[in-house]
Amino acid sequence: MTFDTLGLSPKLLAAIEAAGYSEPTPIQAGAIPLALQGRDVLGIAQTGTGKTASFTLPLIEKLARGRAKARMPRSLIVAPTRELAAQCAENFETYATGQKLSMALLIGGVAFGPQEEILNRGADVLIATPGRLLDHFGRGKLLLNGVQMLVVDEADRMLDMGFIPDLEKIFSLTPPRKQTLFFSATMPKEIQSLVDRFLNNPERIEVTRPATTSANITQFLVRLDNSVPKVKRTALRLAMSREDVRNGIIFANRKRDVDIIARSLKKHGFSADPIHGDLDQNARMATLDNFKSGELKFLVASDVAARGLDIPNVSHVFNYDVPHHADDYVHRIGRTGRAGKTGESVTISTPADSKSLDAVLKLIKTDVPELALEGLKEALADAEEGPRGRSKRKPQARSKDKESSERAPKSDAKRAEAKPEGKSERSRSSRKDKQDERASQRVVGFGDHVPDFMRASS
Image 1 (spheres, rainbow, N blue to C red):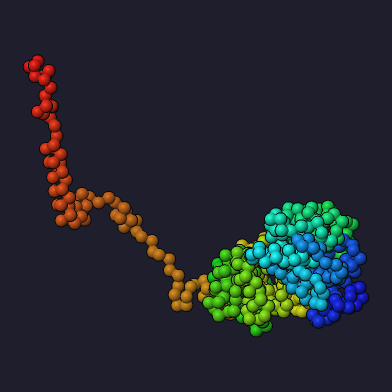
Image 2 (image 1 turned 45 degrees about the vertical axis):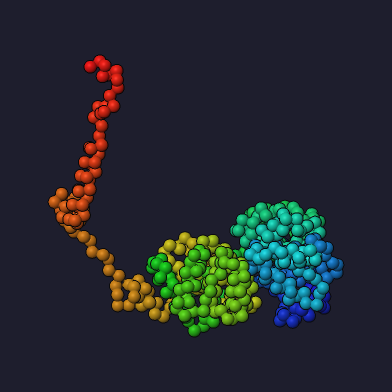
């Protein structure tokens, strides 16, 4: 099957060819014709299968005629993270070449002013994260009653990030007779409830069972005997130093560890930078751009970067931590082996990860072989013992006699010996002078001021 058979216009076909694509993926082949017919679509497909083009292409095709009014976008794409929203914007710009369509990107971390200016000029396509979208609406800068097509991308990620109430509000602000395209990698019951409430008799396109790993990805496991961070970082560097590793993404569960790992890798000569939700948006986008261009070899990331990011030619994914949620394992390693290319994942597991690892293996239903790293035992022994040639010695315990003598109160003689002699004499002399002064000022009886009536009685 080719894109020619999907009902797209010559302009779109030319843009697709210029982007280097010749055959649609299964989710694209199933969703695009239905979307062009105006049907609501429920698309279920694992990450890396081309979901973004599945809604971007029909949206451009249907909006080719007409013009948006000020503050009233004709279509809306909602994505859970800034990076995903920016990726949708990149796809729109790629495929909308030669089309007279305007686009506005509303994401946090950047100023409101430029975004408001674009909205005031009128946007055919509005791409936004839920929080920033509702912020603009609350400020009176945006109306959603002109939306003809609503796209929800990575719906299950919306659930994970707590955006379901925001998503429900967005649905209520848009016209009931709109076309809805709803995409998700998995279908938890909360997501199914949204589909039942807000989609009109949708066509379900499911190209693979939820939460399966791509056959293009070779998976490996590195088992460690302890959870010492230094030992884990040593194993990570050995896995990254193999000849076939061209570049890669390292995932950690905590933002704090992302920064620590990035600093450690830089210290050992690796080209690596962190990316997570606490970083400034401009810094995050610059880091992603450097990684995509090849200037940066390794990206150390939290799960903010795990879902949906289309970063081409990633050769390896390294799980420094086994993810707490088994589904995240699928999304993490899905950053490699994309668009028909092969990839490899390496997961580091410690005894503390046993429950999480069991959940992952149960979900993917695949045996993951252990990776033999040359020099691992020697390197781990060095990491456990400390710097070469120096062993970590425990401080010697003090004897009970010494402790008791140290705790025993000093005698008066010893205390007197401990005090400086000159200072002690001056202190005693000063106290005596003050006592004599107070005694000389003391009044006995009435002194010289005896009342007259007392004199008379005597």
